[in-house]
Image (cartoon, rainbow, N blue to C red; front, side, top):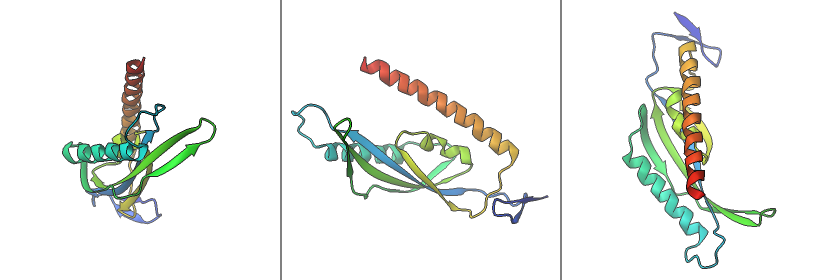
Length: 158
C-alpha cells in the first residue's frame, strides 16, 4: 500500500520508519529572589538548575526515547520585566534525541521551559489515523498530569 507523505511524495507503508530524530530547546528559568540577603546570583542559580536537569536527563529512562546529545553550553541570558520590576534568568538546554513515535516527545514538549522542536530526520513522515489518535490521547494524559503537578506545587506554597 502506498500513502502520501507530508511533502506530497509517496511512501510505501511497509517501509516502517524506526526512529524520528529531533532537537529540542528548553530554556530553564530562574527568577531573581526578592531578598537582598541572597548570596548567589540569579545567573548562578539558573546554571545549577540547568546542571540538575542535565543529570536528570542522563540518568532517567524515558520510554521510546533515546537521548543522543545534551548541550548545556549556551550562555545564560537575563530578561528584565519593566512592569513587574523583576529580573529572570534563562539557561538554554538543547537535547538531540531519537523517538519511536511522535507522542514519545510529549513529556518534553509539555514542560513550561519548552521553547522549540526541530525534526532532523526523516525529511518526510507519514502519520496514520491510529498515531494521531494516540498522540491526542497522550496529549490529554500529559495535560492532566501537568495540571495536577502544578496544583500540587501551588498547595505546597500555601
